[in-house]
Image (tube, rainbow, N blue to C red; front, side, top):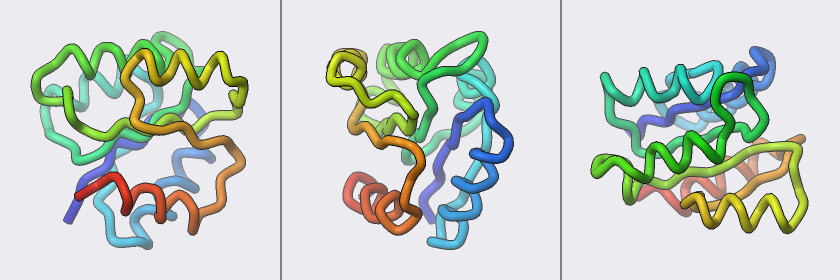
Length: 120
């Protein structure tokens, strides 16, 4: 079973993402911001990280850069799920090392489809 770290400062968004992914057969661990996520990845390996962009303490781009600097997460898929949709933000995501960019609100079926494509 694949393990996914879902990072979002909104409890309701974490619950929706977690429910969607667990229903699709994934194991999900939740983190409330980038700093919390970094603490969780120090204890456990994940097959994919799904993160919001705008969060307190550490945003999604900073989290992505921090994860990419680690050997363990250099090749792990990282998807940013956010309300940000500008080309400039998407380019910043790519530059930080994000695998993909999804815009909220998300379609649960499409989220699962994208994750199935990037997690092997």
